[in-house]
Image 1: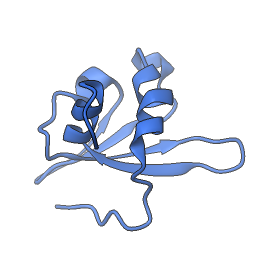
Image 2 (image 1 turned 90 degrees about the horizontal axis):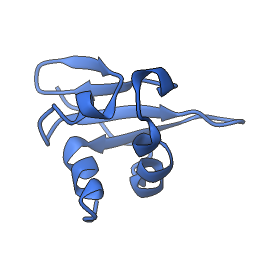
Image 3 (image 1 turned 60 degrees about the vertical axis):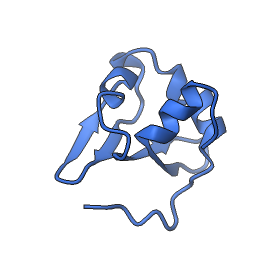
Length: 88
């Protein structure tokens, strides 16, 4: 199973900093992460749960806005690299 990333936002640096990494607990999570692996689609609520998945797992998450919402696409490796200060 694989996501066709066409149409999803992939400019994730600001998204990671302002939204993803600011979610400390499940209670603060406005929208779940949808994790797609080779065999499954899983709803994940926290960063810790997200980081349990393999680097190649694909992730979709909605960033809710005031006038519209954007759906972002990234891989677990992209998030790990960002957290380490690397490039996407």
